[in-house]
Length: 317
Image 1 (cartoon, rainbow, N blue to C red):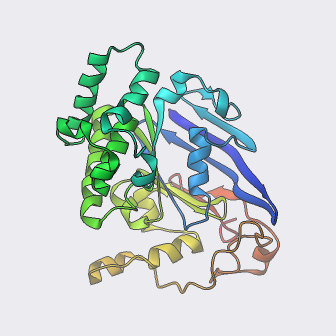
Image 2: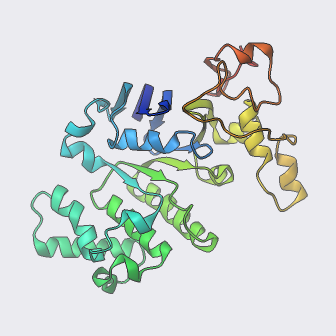
């Protein structure tokens, strides 16, 4: 059963230069206890998907269903019961935490909003418990974000998201601003929390190699649209879309064995076009090494192949 379902979701932004089609007809489901990795280059629209799901943006059209409830066009009117169960961890912990608040004050905010009348002592005990959960000592509650390292700030951001006891958490590139040595600890912590608290994740990242050991399924996004969606093992074993093959062939490796797991070398040409001026036909055709004439004037539809593998490309009619 799906905990989150998007159906033909679009989010457009009018600008002086034209309309930015940031999200253009995205559909996917995420099951209970599942992690969907949403991967794409900067400007692909993956973070806009996150902010539309969380309610910061109301979709231009389409539907979003969470635990069976339609939450799409009611972003500003969502009941507290929805907001309590649907949380987000932001990319940059340095800007997502209020620098003027202590860690205790930061963690108490969701408890005051969603705590159903918790007493001051109960909130204090919950804050201590959350700090223990993220492996920080109780004394950290008196510190401000400026006194913490980048990894510690992100741990606090994770604790804040978990404070309400959510069932679904959006992870918007939660490790991209951190040192490599800290990234592994954060990822291990997130996977442990998923098992312990039966969480579902939408994991947004530009790091495709990270998804091999983290995601249940992987979805690739390019210029506001999904290119390919597949189970993780199937995805890495049999990438179908030329853009996916390009991304996978660009992953740096350390051994010949890892190199053999990658698709053949694909040479990247050009840069991602402006979302204000998206090419006609398939939006990837200007960079595609397998372009056909039909790609220049007809946008392909998403089709199902096998084993839950979906791809949007004219190579697979």
